[in-house]
Length: 111
Length: 118
Image 1 (cartoon, rainbow over the protein chains, first blue to last red):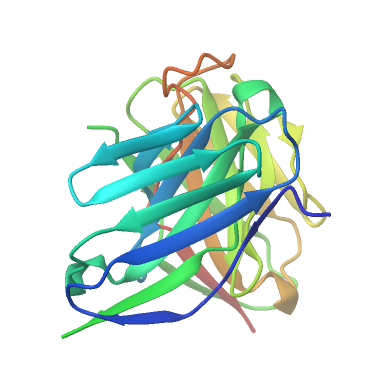
Image 2: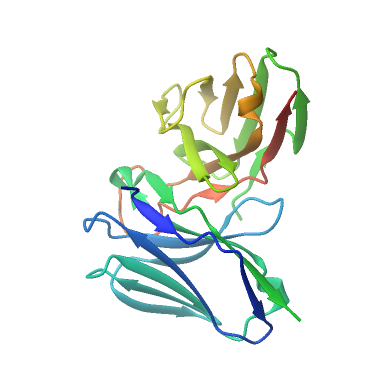
């Protein structure tokens, strides 16, 4: 079983829609979670960092962790064409020195 | 701002050639990483390093080696390039040696090198 699984998409939504991106993970000992955004032909950049169950909000983005279900989500409100990118979930593993990434979900927000 | 730079954005090499990919970070980070990224497979860790002259194998080290002679520089070497090494190569760095929950595990990525092996 993979340590983290992510639906690859692609996901296409109209501008203004609420987007939900999800990952599941296998090890209940994992505590720290991240979401990265990767634009085409660029390296990933950190979007959100969370380390507990519940929600963390940053502008139009909300990261949610449900440790009982081993499920992490990223919600994007009022999605914009500039949100079109690949979104990767990541889990801190290897004693804090490594990240294990999901395969990424490709999102396209259309006008 | 953290800056991670990679020596080339695009590279075309022939099968059997020795290939060097260079990565430099300017934030005095302890950890450096090399990944490859392929459609449907995501980011896969090739090698990482906690300190100068130190290296650890990642998930897919076969066919690769690394060198870290200075703290800011981490090189990936393809000893004899093969067509199945055609990929996007990403370098990253992070601050922490030990988990802290403070975000120091955050990895900062370079722009990537698209390598084509013919």
